[in-house]
Length: 279
Ligand code: ADP
Ligand code: MG
Image 1 (cartoon, rainbow, N blue to C red):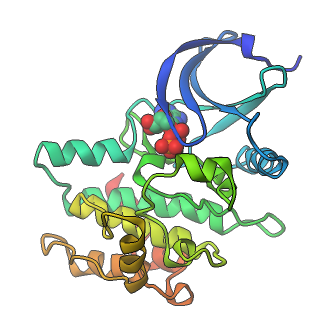
Image 2 (cartoon, protein in one colour):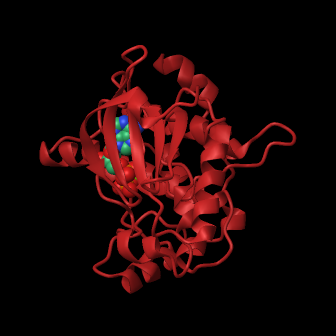
């Protein structure tokens, strides 16, 4: 009784991303609406395939209110495709949310930023701080396009670690990577990186929620890398409190060893307190 592609009805294409296409689907057995990401693995190297399967195995055990829930995977050997089945998030992603705010000349108030911040910090804590014996999970590609929204306007961190496959001489690395606005200095310099890279990227996302543009922007990769390495960005609007802009600054610390951990961020953000207040 293994599941197969025929157990689902494809409703329509949602969008295309770096690794494949995302479709809205319905599970025939109970009518549940889900999505699957269809990834063609025919052009992947053996190493990439291994990483893909490994990542799927890691994320399938992640269960958290603010993380996109993965349900299953189907491997279609004949067509060299893997389908990753996950929770459907009907309200798009933060990238579109920010674009819409900008277009409507609106901005988020302090409380709205904190609410999203707290939810993302909790999602990251689930990944970085694991039970004894479980490996830490580093997301590696935190950006507004990978943060989905549900109909409560709660966030769902998605697209886990597939970014790890973007090694050198990868077909995917060359053809499908957008401008890496959210990459940490250690990532953009192709140095070893750890979970502190996710903290940097989170800092960029929270900054963007306030300013509606990422902190580091440039016309080309080289000048972007230079800005990221200096860690200099336009100040956060004085519309927001010092507490918030200081926390963003700490996450955008160039030296990763001096960047706060997710636990430290949760303490500074007084998360326990805020979650109670916003509920
Ligand atoms: P990218 O490589 O740009 O991150 P993805 O392949 O992750 O793109 O996603 C492609 C599109 O599908 C995006 O527009 C994204 O918002 C949407 N999407 C991804 N996951 C889901 C989901 N679980 N529910 C609804 N839409 C999704
Ligand atoms: Mg994505």
